[in-house]
Length: 479
Image (tube, rainbow, N blue to C red; front, side, top):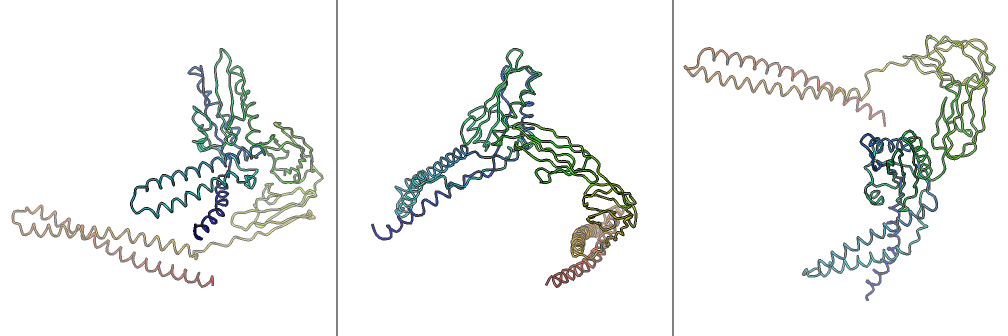
């Protein structure tokens, strides 16, 4: 073996492992694809087939807002194993193609150099496969939390077709990481429902629950199963917290973080202990400690008590401005404003005048008068306006040209026909008069079009000059 061959083997050996690592990285999921299919029915009558669409539609409505998925350590290991098998399959397919290409050249004259090149690529691909088998999958950086994305049909509010074969192949075809499907069977006066969840990374059914109930209980019992499967999709326990505050528009903070005004619904909440703080202008702040259990749907209603208030008169010039206290509309000027101890943001809005915003740290003694500044008028001087005018004038001019050409063509046609008729003594006078009249009308149309072309072209020259002048001044101003 010469020095060049030894060097090539060393380079191939050094590059083979990084190439395998790159192959593994590209299989990492960037999102968690969720799909919900129609249920499969058995022994159902014609009036019961709607359940095969209605029940999974309710499942979609409830689970469609799940924001993200948390990978557990066990699921992460299963995902890495799947990534390894996919990468190995890809490399083996590439190796097979290279071998087929080399074998096809076996009887081809003058292909010796090409076969040598393919042999080197085959050796490199085999080395990649060997290094992949000993690759350290722990080096793969897997995101613990990825967003959940519904299948395209589910995003439109529709259901995927029923699962008629192995769910793994179904998920491969639909590009899903998690599939929810089920079967509904009628047994005498009862319904038997089985709800299943297939995880592509485990290549197994990770959720299987069933129930038997009457038609009246079917919807409610189905939602019990759906709430159980939600934890599997999220990858962690969940809860629901809804907070409503009186008066409406009150600020709501959760553990010191602002989350909304008036009413807040957090459907996929992490169970635990939380501090809910509600505040409103003119009301005493109220703090509530709340414990949210797993799969608990807690409703918290908070009523704030009015605090001590002072009142001051707010006027504006001109009057009639909308008044907002901490983003809450309280009326129009002139207005008596109730004041609490907390600093507030005062905003005045009136059409045609600039927005007035101020932070009031303390209440004015008796009266607060604010002069609103008029909004400056918009003048026709922007470069975009001149550009639009140029394009409009250019379009009108171009559209007027065919009218002139059509008038000229028709006038020329009837003029030739008229001359031929005058030279032919057989042509009656009525025909000659008709041709003369048509030629005059077409000539008039041609003349009017020519005049319009001239006028529009002159107007286009003016628009072009103004647009170029405005562009030039804009360029100079930007230097």
